[in-house]
Image (cartoon, rainbow, N blue to C red; front, side, top):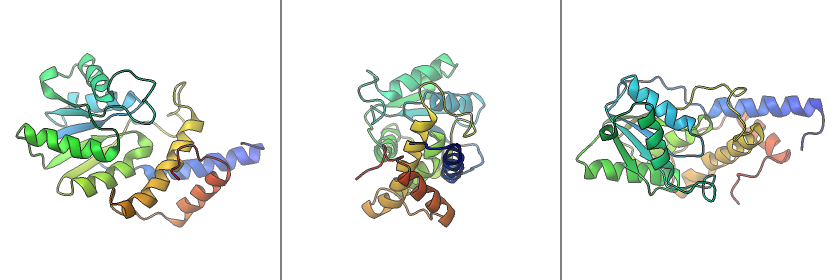
Length: 220
């Protein structure tokens, strides 16, 4: 896929541009609850737990069954594993709610809202924790599915250079980021998210990376 060092540098620059676009750069504020969206990246659980331990909200909700990247690899719901991580970090079990049915971001939001309502809880402000390259899509989904909720979106605090690891390679990150950008453009038409403007320079980066073959996470 990568042909020369010139292409390597161009790929890096274009991927970094999309990485930056996906970040909402929200400021953390005191909230009614922290909603940790399940995924293959356990650092999301750690970020959510630390926010609870730092006193940003009195309740932690983990949400997610198995999704595209964990189905076939994990044997238990993402939300259950994330809840255990939070407990090991010191979050009391009675301050954690587990929603273990959601299989996509829309269901994460809808099922969490339903669970909280069943518990008699009607939060006005929440902190949503997601992977760094899914902040914007998470925000757009919350604003569509749960519009009255004031949502602050955050993620594990890593740079583009530092985020990849043995399990989540840079190649994988770029593929997923490109797919998520495609969803940001397509999902409003399907009623899944609110519209998000895509600047020309981000669109240029998207088109370049698609041409370079970073299409493994795209939808047809």
